[in-house]
Length: 251
Image (cartoon, rainbow, N blue to C red; front, side, top):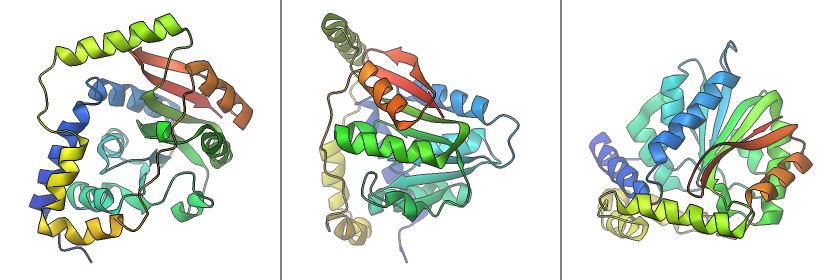
């Protein structure tokens, strides 16, 4: 059982939110767009089932739970520290599940008892290699109900090289117009390691559960092709800023 206090969890979740802004200045708008899609697709459905894949502490999952109070929202991540921070901070509005996305049998850990209405992911699936991503897309297509959606907000390259270069420039320019958050990914983890309340969970994190970053270089059309191959009827981008996209695939 965790001995983490709510005050400690709140402090570290707030710091996590701030440092994540460094990597996606448009993060809140992207979350809103993703929630708009999920809300539309689940309209009129009683107790929709929603997955947040690579949830971290649950920033997106908590926003979905607030938008859809009747929904069952699962926050899925491989990192025990981030899951415990979120569980302690956000409380029972979410169900937290430790699972390594793409690992054989990872969906079994979610103990799904019915088809999924929506699966979302924010800046997480780009860690997967192309072969792993192909398998994950197929697994999600089978887990979703007909008409259900996968909503992926991530860094995805436009197809044309020159357009990709300009999209990256647009993203960098916007970042430069916003003040530095003062903390990045590495410094957040370094400071967390110095907090004795977090030590037991950090020890668990060190036992090989953190996902290895294979990475992929897929363009937008590459993602759409994989999604169609996986069994999704339609797929495309509903929002873009720079090289950040929200891609929706309909089962």
